[in-house]
Image (cartoon, rainbow, N blue to C red; front, top):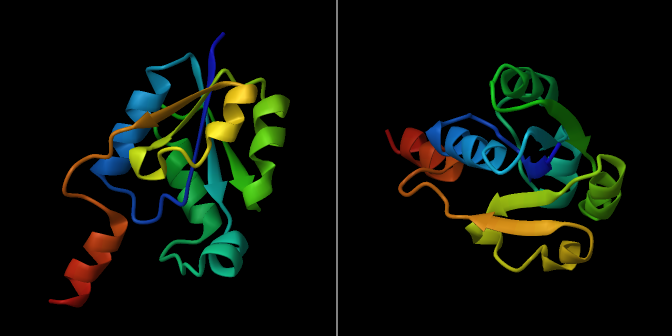
Length: 130
């Protein structure tokens, strides 16, 4: 079984998120999504989410491409996650290109092109300007 992992906040889920999850799952048999906790988002990323961790987790678990959702609590846990869940492929959007190449020692690293013209940040800006 080929195992794939990806990370994200997945707040205000949109078709760009679905596209990356679908493409990540297509690279293997089992997709682990590591979901940023509310504390990690606020303390490390200075991001306030619209939906709580539990709400975002519930939505992700309902998506057919996702097999397991686990919490992301710090930047440093990636190597441990890859080893613990016996990951073959690490997937992120290409806006992170090169940032996780250190994981190539443990698994394949793939940067997928982002879906054009969609982002949570843009959605929030568009809603605030109306």
